[in-house]
Length: 138
Image (cartoon, rainbow, N blue to C red; front, side, top):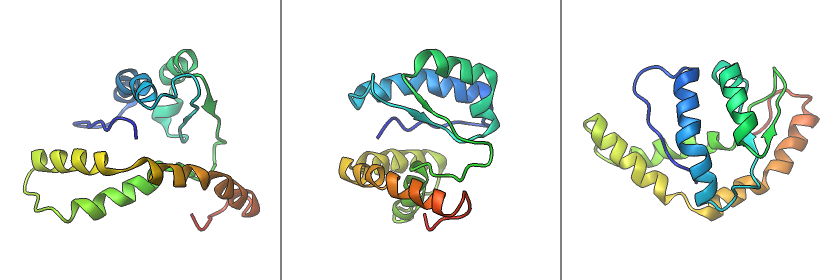
């Protein structure tokens, strides 16, 4: 897994760009994929902002392009489902405890779980094509 980052306030294109600058290359390096990764983003306005697109153009070895109305096939969505399930097992009473437990649970996500999600991508894409871009079982 790459780095987990927290934001305070509202996410906008400048906050997103800062996250990219601070984490993307470092995460790729830590995962030993610096020259071989492709960034996947949905079509959120923060991701498609010119300032972010320009940074990505110069700093990413590749980008997976998505159409304006593409279904969300981002594998991270499964991780976002996993975290609350495990976080709910803790007795959390404040924001600092929440961050602490999120970091702990994030660190527990293992490579085999990620590999399984990645291996499912070809099936996911076939399903998207089969459903003509509509809802899928994923």
